[in-house]
Amino acid sequence: MRVAWAILRKDLTVELRTLETVPAMAIFTVATFVIFHFGLQRDSLSGQLAAGVFAVSLLFAAVLGTNRLFVAEREQGGFDGFLLAPVDRTAMFLAKSAALFLYLTVLEIIAVPAFGLFAAPPGYGGALGGLIVFLLLVNLAFAILGTLVSAIAVHTRARDLIGPIIGLPLQIPALISFAIGTGKLLAVHTVGPGEVLPVHGAHHPAGEWLLVLALYDVFTALLAYAVFDFLLEE
Amino acid sequence: MSPHVKHLRPLTIATLITFVAGLSLTFFYAPIELNEGFVQKIFYIHVPLAIVSLCGYVLGGIFGLMYLRTGKRVWDMRSYCAIHMALIFSIGGIVAGSIWAKAAWGHWWVWSEPTLVSYLIVILLFCTYQPLRFSIEDPERQATYAAVFAVVGGAFVPLNFIVVRLSVQYLHPRVFNLEGGNLPGSMALTFYVMLLAVALLFATLMKYEMLAKETRGQTRRLRRRLLGDENVAPIGRSAAPL
Amino acid sequence: MSLIATGTDFLNFHSSVKFVAGAYIFVLAVIFTYVAIMAVRLGRNQRELAELRRLVDEREAEQAITGAGQATPGAEQVVAAREADAEAVRSEHQL
Image 1: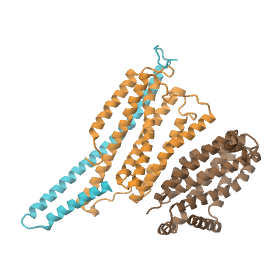
Image 2: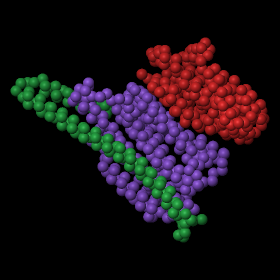
Image 3: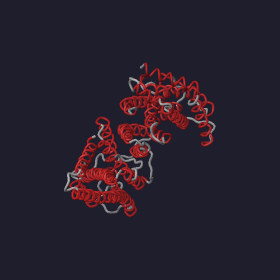
Image 4: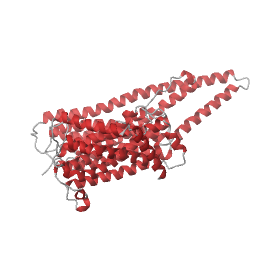
């Protein structure tokens, strides 16, 4: 745990000093919103359409972040140092997925208001609470799978290519649940964060998708935890 | 013969007999289905292909797991051959399925059919298996990473089907229900014979491919011994094991 | 409702034959193409392997003749090389 924290702190310090990843992701997402505006020719998006645009923009940003995740380790020999140290390999997985999770969260702090500004979905403010719950869960899926895929891709020759093509199909189930769930949120106005949770009788249609997304998170986390060690062996 | 490929000849003969039997049953024994008519005959090939290829992916994952546990290269080769064959079967299955969709429903592609959609996603995922292997030069690392991919992919197959099926249930009412279910006896018999035939075909072709890979490896080794390392062209990067 | 048709008047029997034939021909074509490619490759490799084996045997026989009188290091080398090769093959399969 302490090792994971040390790696995470190192990553965050590097990110804060260089500002390489998160700003790029944010610019990319906002640019995607603009592109969608011209592609769809709509001033305002709602319901499933809004959810789809938002989900795809986030996914693209996640791909960008994923590609950058292990770059420092590869270029500056961080892997060797890590492998030499007598520490648990899982620490690397924890730290990297936590870093990606944080990047995505910071990105969304920018992207959610930007989406409200550019796409102006009706009832956006009301759905915000539920949206945040969904965002946290989808970030988790993106972070776990992103770390796994990035660790696979980083040692390949065509790493910028291999990462996304493996990652996108694996993220489809998370994307499906996120897009349909938030689509339902944006279609039904004014939902508080509490109402979405299935604990409260699962009345809201988005609640089921929250459950699917959460199960997918758990499943991918277990899977990634089980296989990640093999990716760090020399 | 190679130490890992045994009983290739009896397997081949069994495959041929079952396949011919299955095709004969399909066209001469199984009755023509009332709703769809003759088109339903496609069902006897595309569904077995799909089922066997999905099992092939899962099998590739299990072999990958065996490689990770034991470190024996033969498991890597089995995993590779299983996924390779499953990919070829998938392409046959999805095209035949698409033709069936066109004939039965009037569209080449139907988004509301979850099996079709999740199948496409699985194919998209496993299409990246070869490029992944190809882009890792060190053979040991190639085998390990491919095994990790195979395990993740194999576990992803059933999960993906569940999520896609849920999504279709929520978005559209299920209209079509043609994956077996309550087939009359003669149709069920035909279907199972075809399923067995396709499964045998998978096993045969997989062994066949393993034999080819092992022969290639032996040839390369002998050539190197005979002519010396410097006179043999370097292997070159390859997606295949060995 | 029975799924089995008893009548003979199927609406579009002729158009459906086209689809069924298309599907089966495609599947069989894919499989046969694969088998053909594999057969060509395997045949080539097996011929080459046989040729190489013949060369190895010839060379060994040659060395055995030339080194018949004296206790040649050649013959021993051949034996050693052969054992090393067998070992390599074994280890590769078991590793």
